[in-house]
Image (tube, rainbow, N blue to C red; front, side, top):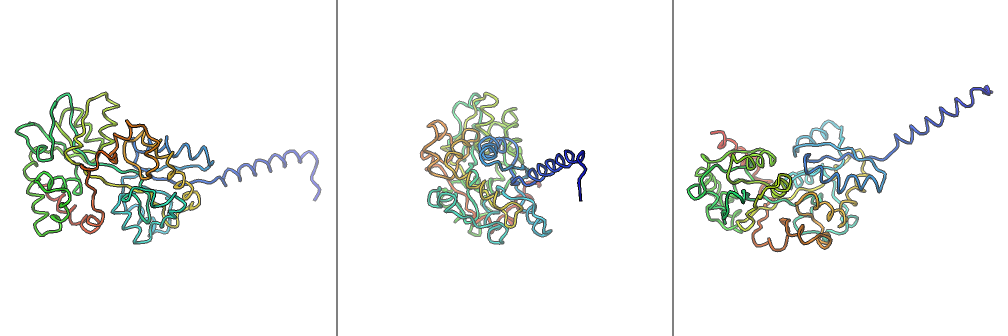
Length: 351
């Protein structure tokens, strides 16, 4: 068919527009879910934006609160929309066993043996290694508690305590306050009287506890003076101290609990190739060394620590000088006991 000459420029322009639209639609993308707030801000600066700049792959960000049910509902509906998500370690074990998360190609991520031993899983590379710590205002308490037993001492340090409404966080701390060594915590919890002992100790402090359900809420209580000391996450404390120019102290020597969140790749996610590229970019020591400038949680790759300043390295829960005070949450224990412990804990809190 002959095309009239005056239509040729119009058709050519339309063709170019259609090609451009097709190219835009074809741009690679990856859907990444995060914890929101300062956590997501840090990853945006250290990971998401540099990754997009280097690769041209678009990151679509979403947020959640760690709900495992949100991914299982996508799987059950056959409509998986997420690619890469940070889950806590018990959920990573469960999702890996159930085939919801893909097993990682560790050779492509620099090698599993190049990670902190508890920060690498068949299905996950640690997104952050956090610590549950004791915190207080150093301008109000000059010589603070040196143990969790002293955290319980409301006679010496009158005032409310900030508690975190989570069984996994409060139960171990209660046993430490009752004199159980960190190495023996899970032996005690596996014994018939273990739970009872933890809750008996919690009973002592319960009248003095103001509960928080998020790290941000807990820090607001401490900053406002509603509580004299607080149970929170280390990066929340250091972040609040910096942002508010306050002398907030972390009682590292009292003992602290280390937990790990992991980046996982969702099986049958919509953008598997881009998801793999993102995980590879994150696994670089340079990426992780940049991340800790914005968020003072530990990172998994050992070589990253050689790229950090001494000041930053010393602020992390994974710093070598803190090893003697660190206790690592037992993922295996909590996979088996989380539902039972949470039900009892929530009932106890509500009484």
